[in-house]
Amino acid sequence: MDFMMDSVMEAFYYFRLGQSNTSTALYYSSSTGQSSVHNVDELPDQDVGTNRLVLVSDTHDRYRCLNLPKGDIFIHAGDILMTARKISTARGEEKLKDFNDWLGTLDFKNKLVIAGNHDKPIETLGAEKTRQILSNATYLQNECFDIDSLTMFGCPSSSGHSGNDSFQSSKFNKETLDTIHSPSMKKVDILISHGPNFELAGLLQPQLHVWGHAHHYYGVYKPGEKLWGYEFGGLSVNASIMTTKYKPDNLPIVIDFSLNK
Image 1 (cartoon, one colour):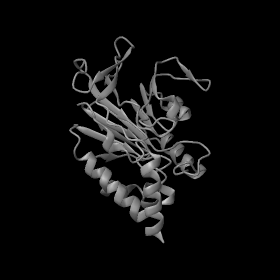
Image 2 (image 1 turned 135 degrees about the vertical axis):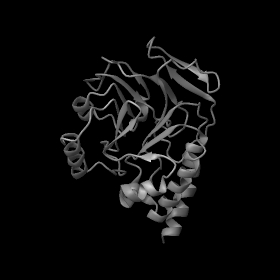
Image 3 (image 1 turned 30 degrees about the vertical axis):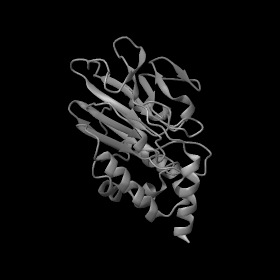
């Protein structure tokens, strides 16, 4: 039965999901506050004293479509898979292994990954098993990770009414807040959450908030801009590769990031 369902879903999403193979990226200049599109091999020179971040989210099984520029830190903000609640955990694990193989082809000093609401196999397998599978990156689930002088916090939480509701339970949200309020919690410079988590951003006050989930809000939001009535305290980036029609037409986003001293 699992094999039959897996085969049906594979066939459905073969036709449902779009294909793309762009060689361009959206570059955001922290110094000018402007965004511009460049060929991945023709980005502006990296700012001195920065980490070049390459940001994506919501690849939904189409990560191999991506042609990424070079950088220091690669961040994937969740929804690696498509409707994983309708495939078996075994098939989901196979897909994660393929994703890990792809991660192994990426030339970055650091690669960070969180899950999203479509990544049911990750919720089922648990964080430790997922880390074993995603051996070519650092998988974060309600925890911090330090790179040089930067502290990042990764959280797969999101909200919505989709049947794909991994990491959206009240229990998981409580676990997240308990972690945030723990005495050992560090000052966070970059928050990575699957959805635009304004509550976490308000508590942690990061300089950069990377997210996805809401495909139609793709893009870079400057400090002070509002979304749904909430004001971003720092720079905020929705890096969803998928459009609302599940076509992987949105570009990877590149930012040369340095801490405000």
